[in-house]
Image 1 (cartoon, rainbow, N blue to C red):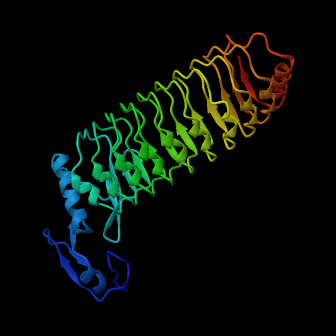
Image 2 (image 1 turned 60 degrees about the vertical axis):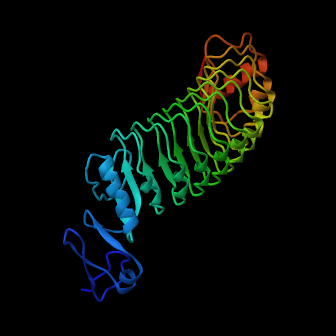
Length: 325
């Protein structure tokens, strides 16, 4: 049976690579000549990435990081391909700081740092340009470095349950971002650049201190889910109907007293949550929302309902929509 290079997977006429622990590895000529490799827990890694994991061991109290098949929600370990770390899970380890060398692991695609005690991130995090998934929820972050906007490949960013009071304007540079979770922070406003996230599909902002929304939010034509519950918003943008892809809208438990007529243009909407506000009148344009599966109105609002709205609610119920008042 042909022997395969443990870095690139090609067949080898062998080189025996002996590391400090005297573990023999098979490496092809090209990898032998082009890279400096060290063995970490039985896996050959680029020297700079090996150093980063050794620095992490020190931060973890000299605890070795195991090689794993995959890194998911609470995994402790790393995955590597062709001598480079691609996934790293460090959740639930009480981390208060990260070594600078971690930002040299530029092949990282998934980085899980959730449920630690991080209060800040290094500006060098912008070097992780291959990163697609970044999990930072349940930490103690009060701000984000502006360099986070350099993560051009980032698709999902999880920041819920932190202490963020504002976002850097550079967040609008995350052109590939599809998921942004910001719930349960201390945000009082959003940067105008939020409207530059043209790939964004899911925006979670519930349980913050927002009082208004920037008009630029209406530029998010790919947005499907917008959760704004438990804020202090007193009005919605008049042109909210421009969010043409929206399917889920939760604006419950705010300070709304009215709804803009253009809300009736959200014809793909499947769930609309309005309870916990002081809305005195439902605009008749709502009757255009015939694709709803769930409509939550609350029991202290909308008196009286117009005949058009009454007929609309009857229509929704007839077609299987859950309506709660």
